[in-house]
Image (tube, rainbow, N blue to C red; front, side):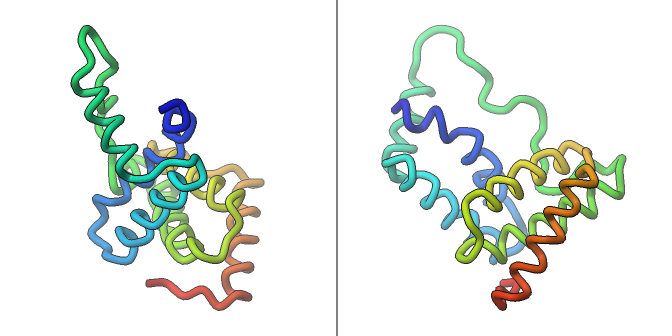
Length: 142
């Protein structure tokens, strides 16, 4: 499952988003997982097989979870929390209309905001550009 190893960084934030209390975010995350797997030539069955293989592997292995993962941004930075919520909404709205490059960017900013890191000015501009794209395309929040 070498293809799954290369998609892990893309899948991790999507899998975490499945824990959202917003049904639209959960549906978008599931669709995103399927899309990322499909692009890697895999499907959910391959992902499940890989999870079983890792769980059954003998000897030491990396912890499944490194620290606590949040479905909301770190509370110590309200600015990061604001960006976390904004990027989550954009990612959800853009699933079917944004190019993969924009979706990857949003996933990366989302992961950083989840850790309490606000986006740089250049990243903020890109986020505003994505908001504009979505407004023009008429993508509405779920």
